Length: 357
Image 1 (tube, helix red, strand yellow):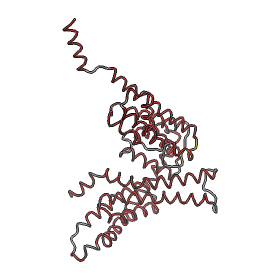
Image 2 (image 1 turned 60 degrees about the vertical axis):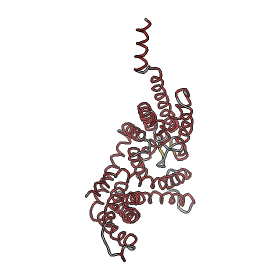
Image 3 (image 1 turned 90 degrees about the vertical axis):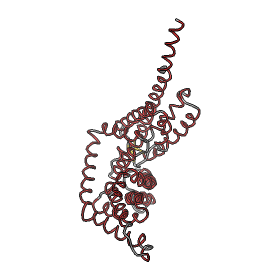
Image 4 (image 1 turned 30 degrees about the vertical axis):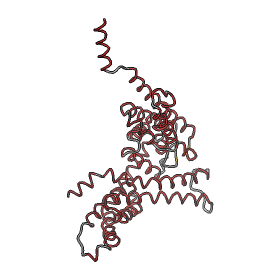
């Protein structure tokens, strides 16, 4: 029981491991798939027999693999290599039979990891120990995990995923601004951390379901914190140390390729001023992207995805709005801090007035 409590306590770590290994599949598959659609020029699957059609299905392969990869490495984080096959196979079956998607992958990864963890604790004769992790445990673990998916939880998870997708489609028109604000705040809050990853997984699911305006909002949002903080160091260098100015240049470049983590050094050094600034700036950029109808055909962000964006002018405007709001707000807050005398300085000034007044 203590082992189970510890595994569940570290769920965030296991999910982060899975997402980290999944991202290369998302980026490679998404960019190639989106490039084939954009180059074809008709917003549809390229015609059969063309190289763009082949390129499209290379991208599709990345999307098909990312769900089992996510599950596999969640399981791996819990119980090492023996959990890879049970988690990946269960997630693959759930995705293909019931369209369980990411929810199914998370469940399959956690369940496989827990099952394999306890299977590894079973005491066996010495001659059988070498075959347990490569033969017995993967087979038994796969049977149990995939069996639970097929005969138990798969259909309810698939129904929940379908309901969420329909809800999102409904928000495209009626509540897209609210959705944009929530996504902007989440993506900026911890800059690549768990909250950011939850929102990002949501975006990947939307791309898989053809909801491209959500990906457009995300494509702007993930770039705003890093570009905004980089811009802030250019606008008013006096507020930043030389090392921070160097970090600002790196942050700006990271933002252009969709890496939110460029803002982390600034948030770590001054969280009370930086975090509100990047969150509000990102929300402003996200809302602008939503109102201007920006769509992105890849689950990534920054200027690097501009070739696969529909509404490029709106994308650039939204990114500029978010970055400028972030930069002006954080510099204003930092300037107010420098102008306001500290409590100790105020007390010292008061004592001088009394002594020499």
